[in-house]
Length: 53
Image 1 (cartoon, rainbow, N blue to C red):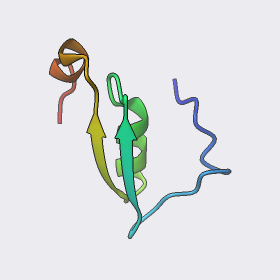
Image 2: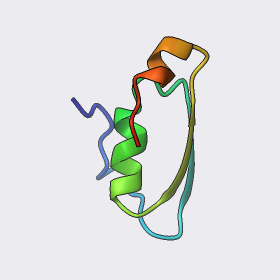
Image 3: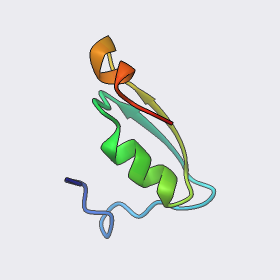
Protein backbone atom coordinates (compact mmCIF):
# COMPACT_ATOMS: atom_id res chain seq x y z
CA UNK A 1 0.00 0.00 0.00
CA UNK A 2 1.39 3.40 -1.02
CA UNK A 3 0.87 5.98 1.72
CA UNK A 4 2.63 8.89 0.01
CA UNK A 5 0.37 11.21 -1.97
CA UNK A 6 2.42 11.65 -5.13
CA UNK A 7 0.13 14.47 -6.29
CA UNK A 8 1.56 16.47 -3.36
CA UNK A 9 5.08 15.06 -3.73
CA UNK A 10 5.56 14.83 -7.49
CA UNK A 11 8.75 13.05 -8.55
CA UNK A 12 9.99 12.04 -11.94
CA UNK A 13 12.95 11.84 -14.26
CA UNK A 14 15.84 14.01 -13.12
CA UNK A 15 14.80 13.99 -9.45
CA UNK A 16 16.93 12.40 -6.73
CA UNK A 17 15.27 10.93 -3.64
CA UNK A 18 16.80 9.56 -0.44
CA UNK A 19 14.45 7.17 1.39
CA UNK A 20 15.76 6.66 4.93
CA UNK A 21 13.87 4.02 6.88
CA UNK A 22 12.61 2.44 3.67
CA UNK A 23 11.49 -0.86 5.23
CA UNK A 24 10.57 -3.15 2.36
CA UNK A 25 11.03 -0.34 -0.15
CA UNK A 26 7.48 0.17 -1.42
CA UNK A 27 7.82 3.94 -1.72
CA UNK A 28 11.37 3.72 -3.07
CA UNK A 29 10.13 1.37 -5.80
CA UNK A 30 7.28 3.76 -6.66
CA UNK A 31 9.71 6.68 -6.92
CA UNK A 32 11.93 4.54 -9.16
CA UNK A 33 8.93 3.51 -11.26
CA UNK A 34 8.20 7.20 -11.80
CA UNK A 35 11.68 7.69 -13.26
CA UNK A 36 13.56 9.31 -10.37
CA UNK A 37 16.93 8.19 -9.04
CA UNK A 38 16.48 6.75 -5.55
CA UNK A 39 18.72 5.55 -2.74
CA UNK A 40 16.97 3.62 0.01
CA UNK A 41 18.31 2.58 3.41
CA UNK A 42 16.95 0.91 6.51
CA UNK A 43 18.74 -0.18 9.71
CA UNK A 44 16.67 -3.36 9.85
CA UNK A 45 18.76 -5.86 7.89
CA UNK A 46 15.86 -8.31 7.67
CA UNK A 47 13.74 -5.70 5.84
CA UNK A 48 16.53 -4.98 3.38
CA UNK A 49 17.21 -8.68 2.81
CA UNK A 50 13.64 -9.17 1.61
CA UNK A 51 13.90 -6.43 -1.03
CA UNK A 52 14.42 -7.71 -4.54
CA UNK A 53 15.72 -5.63 -7.43
